Length: 153
Ligand code: SF4
Image (cartoon, rainbow, N blue to C red; front, side, top):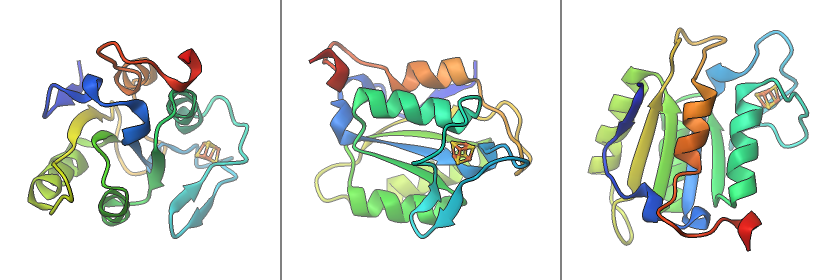
C-alpha cells in the first residue's frame, strides 16, 4: 500500500474545497499533446483516456474539486496552494517530492487553517513516464465521510 496520510480528515472536506496536485512526469512522454503554461500542464482539451493524468483529472472534475494542478515541480505546486488556500489536498508525487511538500505545507502560512492532506506515492518514479496506482489514487480523490459530490446532487 503506497497511500500515506498526514491527516485523517480529508474525507470530511467538501470536494469543492479540495485541490488535486499531479506531477507532470505521469504524462505519456511520446504522445502527450499538453502544453506547459504558468499554471502547469494544460490538459483541458485532451482526450487521451489511457493517460493516468486524464483519468485522475476526470475523477476530480466529476467530484467537483476546486482546483487541479499538473505541476512540473514543487515550486509551482506550492504557489498553487498559496493562491488557492484549500481545505483539503490530494497530492500525488514521488516519495521525495511528497516529503518535501509536506514539510512546506507545515511551514506555510495559511489564511484559515492548515489543509488536510492525503498523499499517494508513485509506484514507479524516475522523472519521465512515471506510474501511479490509478485505482488507489481514484479512491483517495473520491474519499468521503458521507458528504455528496457534485454529481450526486
Ligand atoms: S491528459 Fe495526459 S496526455 Fe493529455 S495533455 Fe494531460 S498529461 Fe498529456
